[in-house]
Length: 257
Picture 1 (cartoon, rainbow, N blue to C red):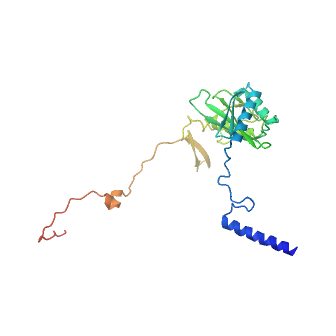
Picture 2: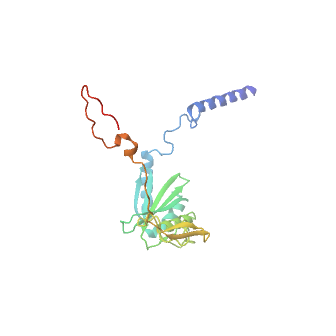
Picture 3: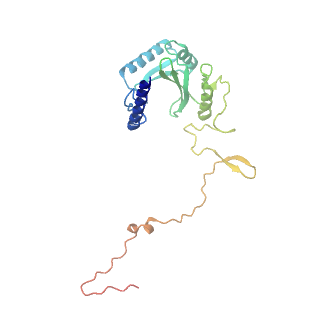
């Protein structure tokens, strides 16, 4: 027993010394760490599997699914009609071959040149099959989109954020309020037509003892720039002076005044 313990301690010391020599990512069981551990390999098998699954989903729900594509070689995207948010998300959650039960993210993209300027993006995860899928739909400023809260409770605050930042209205949402901007805020900051400076600015008022919101002030106060110019600091950039007269043999240099 003591010999076995001694051998184990010696092995631990050798492993620690090896790890210290090779770096913190080195593992004695797996050898050298992979060069790009967070990037999935672009193998043809995964690409073909995603393509086949996308075609399968499109055949199962042809009424709502308009386009299926595999981007970046291993990311499956499904474009659906706005009326198909609830049916498609429910199908992807409950179907045996899908089981995308986790909503990782819900966001939007503003493309003003399109007729339906907003693109709603649902990122789903299937822990059973270790797979991801991206569902996209579209809408404009006035047409609401069905809320995904009945299918995924995680969509509650995501949809509030999209409403706050982009102004996309989600029908049948249990509590569609702003979530990031202040009370009484007007406009939606992530729209492309929203000015970068905004419409109001906040400051603390000493008289009122609270933070007040005022219209943004773009006028700049008068500034007097009294700085050293490069021509005064660096001699190489000074104006060239008149050339001094050349002296010939026997001439005396002029005296300095």
